[in-house]
Image 1 (cartoon, helix red, strand yellow):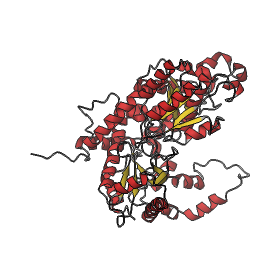
Image 2 (cartoon, helix red, strand yellow):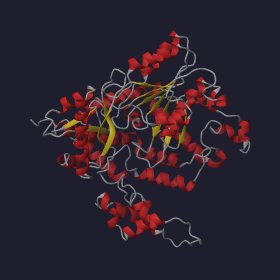
Image 3 (cartoon, one colour):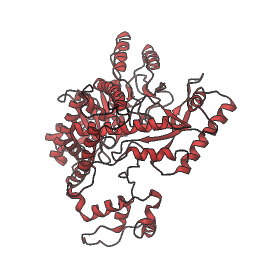
Image 4 (cartoon, one colour):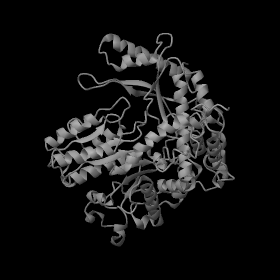
Length: 560
């Protein structure tokens, strides 16, 4: 009898399907995508395809050092025009060819990856068309394309596409800014005219595990970060602590304090923690009823990284038609159940330029009830130079921007139409299987502690210890986690940090291009309700070209 395959092995059916997908949508093949046959594109891609370490690329580029010197000395606009001759300035080609090369399979530093071929084509079309989505007179059919993408994402999420709306904007930070602003304007309506410090007292709530834009956005809005923001504790898995959220929310309501917005995260950058939305919604409803609160908090979800899991909401996990391996299937099922709760959010962030395989930038803030945008509207008299008859066809009066380009819309729309649900499922599952194999290999390696192992996302983090000193990484991490506020504790942690940092530097870019991060993990909370951050290393396996052999090569040199 044939033994069952190892739980982390890639099944033959899946391997065949992901191979076809790579060839169709990530090959930069000019016979499939004629755009790449144009000389500038062909030349750039030919150089980027060479197996050259990033530190040596300038030296290998024709006249590379001289080109770099010229670029660094360029400080004046040419006096005369240069007539077109079918060639692009060599300096521009140099900059493009030597920009970050996401096409190499080793690039796993962060939540960014090579865009798909249809995504690139769409971005080029959007650049050529050059619409300004802020007004239909400046965009025409591009507005209809934006609406179509919004309806597609709404339907995939489980929202009513006729009731939902959205706005393509400039990155996930802007999307989260809209999330905060929607809550502020809905629950503190006088803030638009008189500012946040006029009228009712308020507190804005987010998670200690959220993206740093959770804080920078509030500073931008003029929120008093010290006195008007409550950051909720996180669990060992970096989820929002529901018990702490209830304590804080109850305290606010008891004092008659308005909570305009609660910011959740579904897929944190470093550990892929996924907050639950339905329990937060139920908690808000219960406490608002108890304290007779009519201004309910606006629930915004930063799903910039994790949003593609919505493509699995209708997946048949029992039949498993894609032949996803068993090790991945359990974690995927768990996270999909959490993403099923996304429909309970009032708004959420979508970054197509992350796990959606679309070029920078392509971001969309989704809003469940289009009526919410009325709270953002400014006086129509401020828009006197626009054509009155067409103003109601866009969100002109409600948007932050006065210019909204269409590149992100065209790129997202083209990618969605070519890849479809199954294509996105394959890409997500491939990332999760690769990350799962990485965690599996880390767990087998002396001196390695896998961080947040229950978070089965594309991000995988770890702490590295000297095997000659630390025999049991889990026990060592447990000591670090306990926050022993003694000189010995600090010395011990500093020693471990230095070992990992030096190993990372010695290893360099071998096997995988990972990233050393200052806050890969955290300790337990101390008596003052504070925790300390612990550094570590991470890899994010969104790159569709990364294979198990690249991971094996990395593990072989992990200690430098």
